[in-house]
Image 1 (cartoon, rainbow, N blue to C red):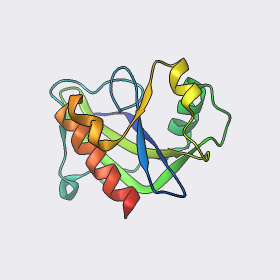
Image 2: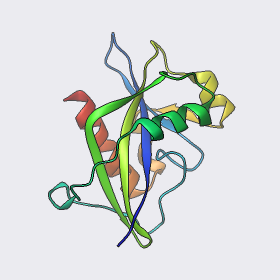
Image 3: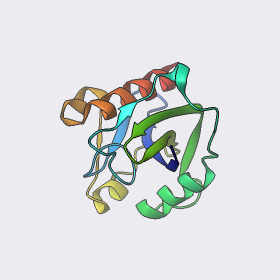
Image 4: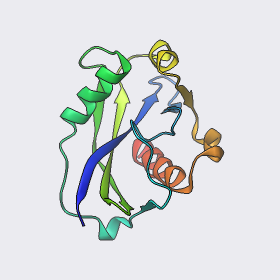
Length: 139
């Protein structure tokens, strides 16, 4: 099975309140291409030992959103794996560095910020990924 390019979940955690919001693109919360319909989240115990360095993925996200370099920061020690019919996909996690979420960037790209409680309309695999990301960020 081949490994496909990694994807990214983007979030903002409010420093004062701890409120966590995820960037939801028109295709879902996995940037910048939706996962296939048959995608399933792999159990962490069976994840590959291969780790992707997030720098290139994070920089690409900044470019896609029209943000300056350093506006998005990788979340260390988070990597989930999704099995798809075309191969394995690593899902990385990164957060917006600003005090407030970049609402203008989200609006420009037809995206919005959602709380985890607003994820009901997402696919099962995306909801599972958000749960893992939320647990990771809250420690």
